[in-house]
Image (cartoon, rainbow, N blue to C red):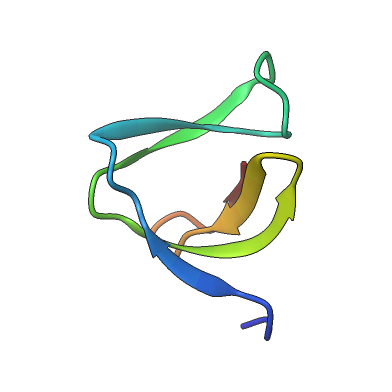
Length: 59
């Protein structure tokens, strides 16, 4: 785990995770309410994170 990782919990029922920090970017996967993620960095108003449930990184 990176030292800069910060844990967070998804509060929305379902969120669309993007491949890159743009509104019109392709959806990579979805996460559901209660999922724990780790915030890796902030890019503008987007959070780059990974999830133990899905071994992928998204925004």
